[in-house]
Image (tube, rainbow, N blue to C red; front, side, top):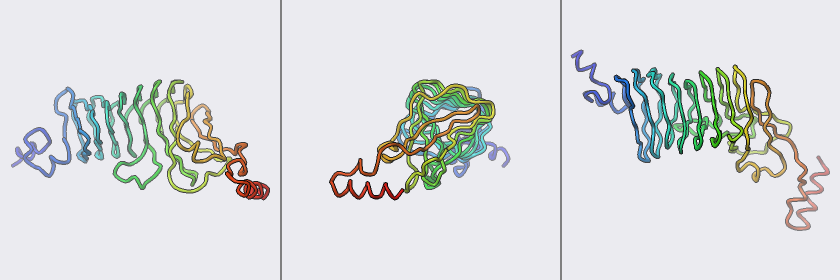
Length: 257
């Protein structure tokens, strides 16, 4: 009956298990819907409406792939919240939480201990990705932007419709995406904000610095973008040779350009 159909949503009867296992359909009442994934992964493909809040805590991943219109704030206090669909509420990431995904969120604040990392949990083979912020973006001191960089000249991107405010104590952690060598004189766009970028990052870290000894990675800025520039450094091929023959071959290769 129609009455039974109305009670298909998670937490309101569970009469339709096919719908229920896809997550809640509504946060019917104002208040916090608290989710601890306890080291497991859960995919919510329903489109969630309502006035409630969502708090993600604990290890493991919660993946939201629906078109979610619930209006309460979203908090990521631990583990991973992956937004591969859309949420309209403001999102806050702190403690040991990570926000990832290839979808869109409302405003986004990444606090101390929190991480933002564009990309797909469901399909990591997608490599670099775009995470859209339909409001303002704030990255506070002690937070991290985990940015994937591909030798193919593509990179992760945070695309902000509003303004972006970067605290000096925030950092970017570079992660290689894919095989190959990085080309010098290459510029990647890591963040773009239509309303302007205020502030600069205080640190640039990651395995790329030891993985790519012949190039330097440096952040650059203009009024609406944060870039990563790749340039040749002063380390020669001969410098990394362990034997006389290796250094000789390196010097010869360097001479060829």
